[in-house]
Length: 212
Image (cartoon, rainbow, N blue to C red; front, side, top):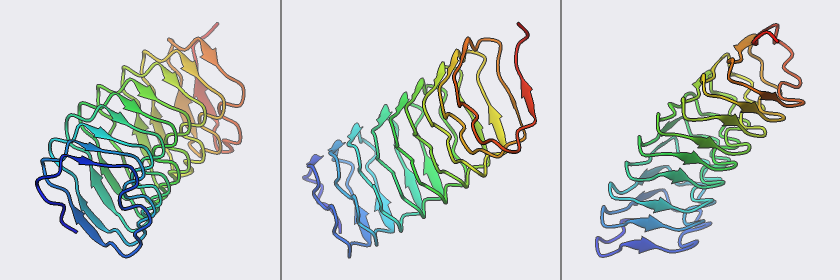
């Protein structure tokens, strides 16, 4: 499918559950893509997002199980909830430097995702954003992030190295549930370490934490 260059806006659910679509080219004239537009397009393997994209809706590519790579271009400031959920073939996601928020469940269940570089402008990672991303081996949380929310990295069983920012103040429950890293340094800036934050981290043996 090639969307014509006269289009500036793609509305809610336009191509949702079109299970035979394999590729989509979106022109640079498109500035907004609403929610559910490509969700459950299970054969979609190639998509070109526009350079001038300003807004993407939630559940945008939910359960697009054939897509392996996505690039979100500059100008986008927020990845909405469920946007890339259960994209089980997604290996690479390229995020823009303009990004400030990754919303709840945005990458939940992206089991093939091997790595992700979080931009410096990022200040908020919401609940369960990366839950079940079992292929990610290391993560560096940017300095502007002050809170690790509920279950953000839960079930990231491949995670071997976590670098937390010196600005971090709070780690919420289940933040690292079932992770298998062996050690983690918690910065001196942390004032709240919630219950069950590291529950079932069965290989964890060393925690660097400020003395009382």
